[in-house]
Length: 96
Image 1 (cartoon, rainbow, N blue to C red):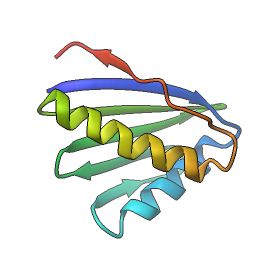
Image 2: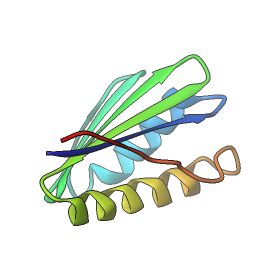
Image 3: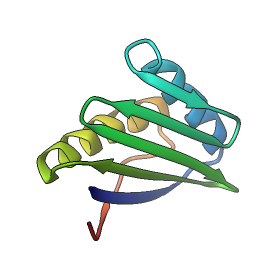
Image 4: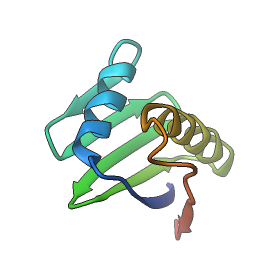
């Protein structure tokens, strides 16, 4: 599996987990609590963790291309739902 991780500063990471997971739950499997989330897409999955004023996202996909697509989808929605608190998501690749 290909993996990438990003941590973004945000004043309310738990609120973002709720917004993202609730939004995606209309089309994919999504589970969440106040400080964690799990999104299962056809091309991979993304786990979300809230800690203090940081939101960590960890995405996995079978291929590099699917991982790139998954990262773009999650990041674009995060930026939109963060309402000005997050400008971009800087992904860091992890070993397979």
